[in-house]
Length: 441
Ligand code: 5AD
Ligand code: SF4
Image: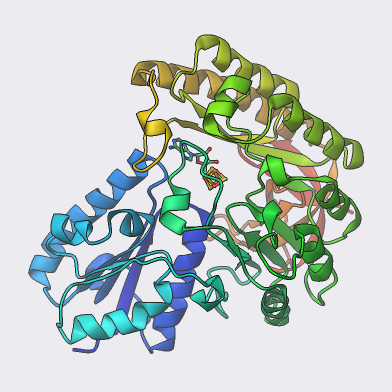
């Protein structure tokens, strides 16, 4: 039977969101179309995340939800893709009898072939080996992504850092960069279709090119991308503090299209925890880089990731994390309770922290950071900013966009503004998670 409709449920990071866009583009190319709900789809794909245990649980509850659907409509093809697929491999087929295929992180380009095999009812399929040459992974962005103004562009695949808590090197394989000429070609093509902003994606973009024979650096890539006709803004994520250097600060300072925002995960304020995490920097080294960035770009926005309750984290270690938040005053942070992950070194470390202590520490982090983020938003009131209009909110008809420093702005007088336009706005109100603004005269 030829299947005509698909539904993709996506969990996890921007890398996964982008992989889902690529899968959707492949299915569209086969003449299929997106269903509005799982019940009406003939192909169901769950693109999964395993960064923390909670994310992995969500996958199993989603699969549970689809069991009755498969009973009612046995011809529905159910495929699990992404990090849980990579981690569990064919064990997942054993655990979930109503699953048709397991598609690893290096195999999304095989989706059409996998669908053929399911159709031929040959066998249930697992495709999870790591591919050696990343250039063959079809990392190319789809012609039409989810957003007509902003697009992700994969510049690297995988990670070789092996931070002791992190499952990513096991689920996405070793760090491999894409060739620069392919990236430039892709961005030029995207800009030609009206894309105004790109976000360069990789687990460790600051190390871009180090693995390539030609030996480019990330700052070289930024320099080549700056000035592509039509492209107004360049963002990138995620940066590793160890590889963040003066050449990147210079690129952020001097290149017009590179936005004044960096996501620079600190993870902990305590040197002994950073060392146990295998992060490769001390708090003082991190701080020196932040200070030097702020010297060059005083209004730069800095966001971060923090983990509380890493094995062995004492109250004194945790206080250093709070002190780091007060000292650096990040614009925004993403904070997590440590979660033991399979294959990682930290899972077998001694002195795991009780859940109640992790919960309490996380709430103290939230309380402090919420105040800081709100203060930033309040202090923006009255200032004039440039936003890139990204879309129109269906309920309120407000235009929304982001400042160059990545703050979400809702426009109160959106008349005659089209998505894709750069607009000068005056901030009228700083809220907890966003800013309100009117057009600046
Ligand atoms: N437990 C909790 N948080 C984690 N992260 C990665 N692995 C874990 C884990 N095992 C967080 C880190 C990383 C972000 C993407 O997720 O803060 O920067
Ligand atoms: Fe995970 Fe560390 Fe690699 Fe980031 S740098 S993906 S935290 S191993």
